Amino acid sequence: MVKKLTIILTTVLLIACSATKPCCGQVYENKEVKKLLKFSTFYAAVNGGTSLSDVDVFSVDNGLSTQTISTPYDYNLTIGLRKIARFGYENKAQTFYDGTESNYSDAATVGKVKGVEYLFEIDYKRQEGKTYVDQHHFVRFSSDEGCPDELCVNFFALKLEYLEDGFADVKYFEMSERYRHRDGKNLSWNIGLTHRLAEPYGYNALDEWMLSNGNIHYTYLALQEGYEVDVYSNTYYNPAGEVVATSAEVWEAVVIPQVLSDYTDKKRKELKKMIQHSLVVGFDYYKYNKNTWLHAWGSLMPYHYDDGSEFSYHNYVDGQWYDYSGGLIYGVKVNKQLGYFVEGKYNKYWNREWYDFKLGLNYTIF
Image (cartoon, rainbow, N blue to C red; front, side, top):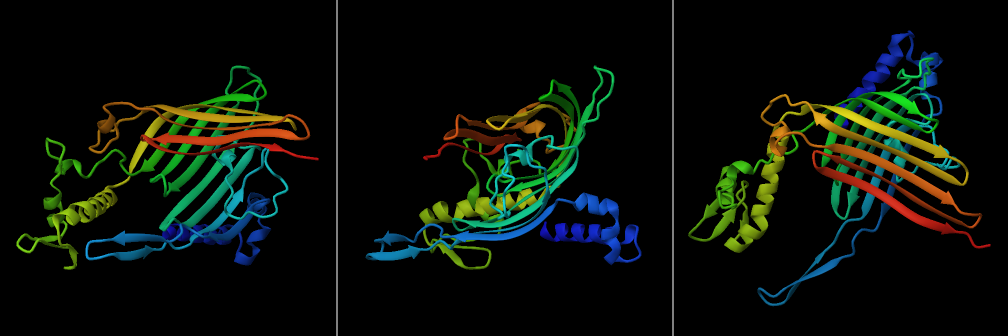
């Protein structure tokens, strides 16, 4: 994915350099490019810290023995480019982007200003010894074009997004186009279509190995994957010929779970990505003053087109299902000393959930 992203960015730069100017060094003279990049911020940051402390594991199988398990330090390498107008409640005096920001408003359907906004961010992380990659890229366009007819649709919004969340184990492309209608100064409703490209969620590679009693042919599966079993010496070997267990207890408790995990990952990667077309309805609400603000948005996908394919998610849920997402940012400054806030966002796609939130109060003593 990193290689593909690099190729895409390189291609975009080459096209930009050759489209209207004979020399790449003159690209910044192009007013449209300068307008698109104006007020954008490129950032790169590394954050690190201590992870879990060392843990001593004791064993009495052959006398007392101690093994110390160490977890390497946590780190987060972030590279990004963003151009997103801040809402009234957001900190406009921020000096630097350090890669740890959690801007909930980035998930909103509609931006603060009319026009194009974008975010391209990739995070290489290690947390509690586990290494993974998070990515979030999107281009968002929202308009505020009025028209004389009160019944006409006078707003529209477009968004192209790619999300990869390592902890939630979810990864997809999404494109949405929505018509919007304002209902008063602060509230607008929207309806449109979304198109998501992702792996066939719902597919379980282990179903074909399940028995009627709920057990699984795990030894036969392991043999198929290249493992070997010497029943006479009660020794178990991995595909490289290395001994991985010398008892059935270790084989079942330690080796087999890894076999099943590796097999599931392999089969998932073999499947082609699928496009899911869905109907989407939603709302946006934004009201702000210096003492109180409320920003809320939500989307519901109540209907999904069934193309009849073998791995369609419809087959795993026996028909239609609901996908939805939303966010809430609410803050109150009661007086010069006291204030409180609630912020968060929530997503549920293909029965996979990922969310984060924070709430608290501030009291200034003087």
